[in-house]
Length: 316
Ligand code: UDP
Ligand code: MG
Image 1 (cartoon, rainbow, N blue to C red):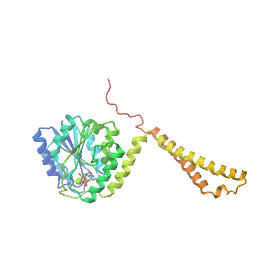
Image 2: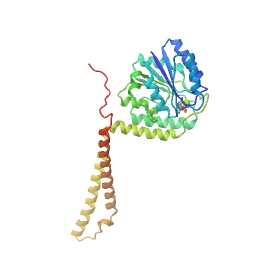
Image 3: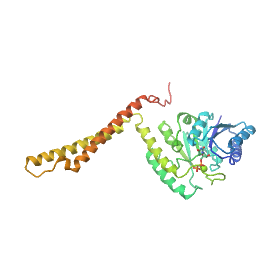
């Protein structure tokens, strides 16, 4: 099969028939063999009935339904597990992403050799309250992830080589960072294509402004787990040792300073009257705590089921 289109959806009943008809049109025009996998993320409207009806009139339409709402990432992950196409395309259900982009995305994967191509909504039809934070968000993401050529990490329209979606695990709210997940899994050919974007036609957005707070926290988590997940001591140990040594030196300076003054008959103050004494104590305490956190982290990492899982590319 050429293409799997994975569509996560939550209460998008009005959009589904139009979206399906549009995808069918594009697929037919280019002669692709395809499937559409609708992942119903616990919708409370009649999205699921609509999907049922659509699948009866077109056998290429498949559907999976969660019993409750889990979020976009779990929906994508579930769709990825079921996708059978050589190229997997994800798009939002709300008609903001255009199926007309599919052929070019498909070509970039199959002919230009990209592992992943992300859409870039250069001209967005979203409120300003979303477009401005988005710019900031993407700039931060570019820096932290080191994927400098992406302008729009969170674009719902993306294309993947099948291998990629089978080797990454999207959980929590991590759909915002799938390119980073792919990079961490060793897929380095990540490209971008400017895509058309439309205002939402039906229904309303499912994400509020909290997406930016959560997005930032998730980015920190991914950065940390990607870099130190297998060796937490390399972060905590370094920080802890530095702080401890700094504290030790500082406390020594305070102590010897007093002895020196005493010895030379200068006026001196008690060690416990010096604010530096308490600062050094705090440093030493925090330092040992960090060091212990490193040890605990190592104990956890040692028991992690994936500790010896590596992405093997080829073998003879
Ligand atoms: N979505 C989902 N589960 C959720 C929230 C959203 O499957 O809990 C789907 C939603 O139906 C849509 C896509 O994720 O197909 C993107 O959501 P939305 O259009 O609300 O996001 P925005 O365009 O505002 O970024
Ligand atoms: Mg949308």
